[in-house]
Image (cartoon, rainbow, N blue to C red; front, side):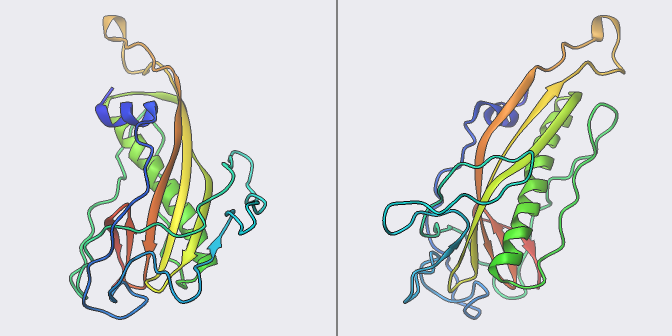
Amino acid sequence: MNRRRYLSVAGAALAGAVTGCLDDSAGTPGDGGSTGDLSGTAPQPATPTGSASTDDGGTDPPDTVTPGTRTTGTRAATPPSIDVETPAPGECEAPSRPKPSTGEGLPDPREYPDPPDRIEPEPVKSYLEAYEGAYRYNYRLADLAEDGACVENFETYVEGSTVWQTERGIVGEVVTWGSYTGTTCSETSGTDTATPLPHADFFSQPAYYLVTERFLVLDGTVVECWE
């Protein structure tokens, strides 16, 4: 089993809070181009969309979830900061997204969603859930493909999400989990037959996003350029 998937299955890939601030002197507010701390604490406190702590110590009801999802309860009341080197206008470059080529024994990768029509909390929240669901699924699928594994069942679920409107753009947290059940690959035989992978559950894993009119940042890395 390769090291990346081992860490994911073991739960060591649970992301901590991402710290830092954007370093960008070019651009305009709202597109990642103004200065200041990414947390975007404006004169009025940023308001999260989703389940969050309340001022009186209680909690809002958890987000409504669809079958096959889980919820973890409250979310942070303030947006996390994100450490990223902001690309200058016209110089945005993004690495290739995980999207492995798979054959018999593994499912096809998931398609990534189109960018949101509006950089506003509700459409961005839906977009980030779809994007992180596809990204995490394809990331784990790439590990399985690299190991030459075959699976009977494999899935990644969105557990919950929260977004915050800030002066820089929209900051979001999306939490996923998943599982797989291995099986013997049909193309192997005799002494070459590998022992099927066991059933494994991926621990809950948060991912932190920044969405602007120009680009999408995931865990401190620009992953989509829209200019």
